[in-house]
Length: 112
Image (cartoon, rainbow, N blue to C red; front, top):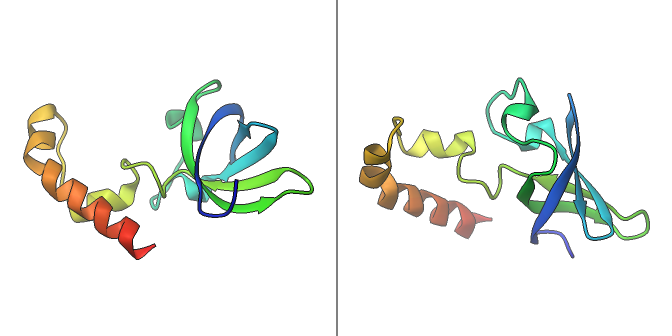
């Protein structure tokens, strides 16, 4: 595992300031600011204990086996997507906007 990798881990703890993630023999933290570009009042509305989450590695310390992670960098429901595509609830609006949504995400990933 190295900085920039996309990894999967299991949520092992949730605090007001972030969620703890277990990835193999590493312990990770998704700070509350890394869940969304917008305000997050309650992390438990995004993840629950036992959830498997996809995250991006921001920093890694191989000596202590600690990892800093980002949820918003790889999950399409991060609030930054809403800035590009106005989506209303329901499947029809998703079908109508899917191409724009994919283009936005593709362009974001190319810039990183």
